[in-house]
Amino acid sequence: MVLEKVKEIIANQMGVSADEITAATSLKDDLQADSLDVVELVMAAEEVFGVEIDEEAVLTMTTVGDVVAYIENKKN
Amino acid sequence: MLIFVSTSCKTTEEIAAKADVVLAAAGKPLVGRVDRTEKGAPTCKNYGISATHTDGVILLALADVPVGIDVERADRKVPDSMRSVYNWTAYEAKRKMTGEGISLADVRKGGDYTDGVRFHSFLEGKVVAVAGGDDDVVAAWV
Image 1 (cartoon, chains in turn green, blue):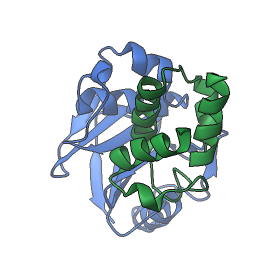
Image 2 (cartoon, rainbow over the protein chains, first blue to last red):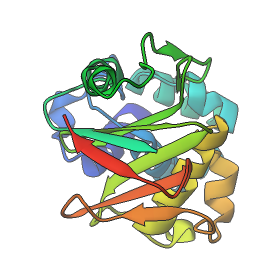
Image 3 (tube, helix red, strand yellow):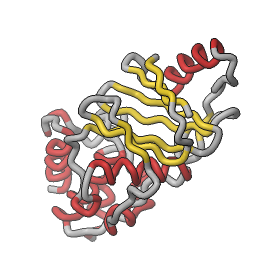
């Protein structure tokens, strides 16, 4: 499931437990992700899901749910 | 060029306020109100301004020309295409100086972005990169 995998990727990168992450979790506000974190997350997600993530889309992604929605969209 | 460093301030506005105490004492123009561009970059009336933070430390760079500053832990992992933390911070500093922000396409493509960027080592375990500004640097802890 996309959400579970995304939570795993984020947990890995940010050094938090996947259990602490929900779809509502804000990357910047709740996880304190900086630009390098976001880049690493995007590149990891691209590798795991086999999609390419648009630059403009990254700017609009604030929550974990946004990331999941984008990936699910791309895969369909 | 002035670089203010703080471990007690959490935001650009906070460190700018502290910087203003020093600037006022020195009889120099103040930062005053910090506005934001669409991309969230700080701007102010009297200086080229840039800020960065990591690991509980925040830095504020002020210059008479556009300036970009970035700080990262020296042991931070960066994408392979970006080669090293030095190169990453150099890239970020340059993109902050121009106000463009980072581009995923550039990161994917990778390359050497260190040309013309100055690195400072006054923070242990951290890399500080500055693009633009000028060579005459005064750093102050606030």
